[in-house]
Length: 360
Image (tube, rainbow, N blue to C red; front, side, top):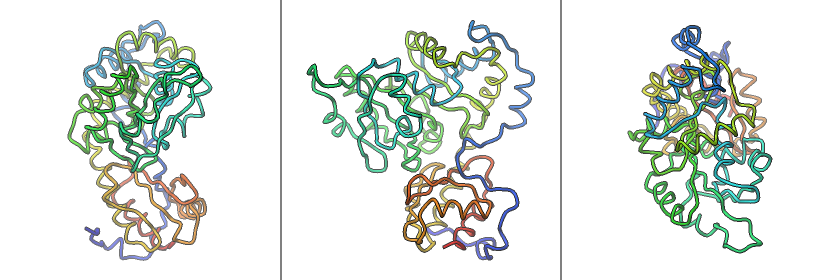
């Protein structure tokens, strides 16, 4: 159903050139809440490289409880968490199967190759979803001159596909069939709490069959820094070695983990608001001439839309938005991405629709 027009939407775009930027580039731009700042100031700390930071230890323990895992490790970034997992699961010269828009091969500085010595074997999936039937055709035959398949990586939600939620039955099937082939499966769950909010499933249910899972504290959950990597005790013990090798051995990290604890405990329930705002944006954009987007394919807080029919490429479109104090991202010559989060209001989303309508 089209969004009902409000007085704001009926008004002219000239009245709504915001003074304060509307920042829809990513949910990474969120600011820590006052409660997070207080927790950081009061955090009990120690040396985490020695395993002596009590706040980091509490965060890791709490993550294992929520995800029903044996162990967890706090890492500075989601990229580091993913790349430690890849290094842990593979060895040099192997292949990693993933969807072609996966974060691990598009937005992580080729670390798959540089650190783990692996090459990607990407597969295109409709709306970012790949199936076991597609995957099994790409698993390397066991002959000496072929790079062997070392790992499968799925992403939930899938960022560059527009916040796609990976269907649980397909994820479970991929894990089961991969394990029969002796291939581990890692979940890039940077925004898995968004998937949980949208589906009503717990993050433990969504990730239970994966060999490892990474999730971010610093995106929709609003913490200033940090991600978590979870797996078996042996996996995480080995991950500590690779975290150190990547320069991620932090000392008094409790000041960061304290914000992460608040994010983990307090922020998941409000993610549905971000999803509602994204849907409002999508429904408004769908009514604008030249914009191509299906609001039904916006299940979480990310929307990707095509602008080629507006007479502008995405880079020019992005600059014109920036000139009007709306910050977004061009992710290809034809496609734009907007991401809702706790620091963008419903009114700002409606203002964005008005401004884009005025551009087109």
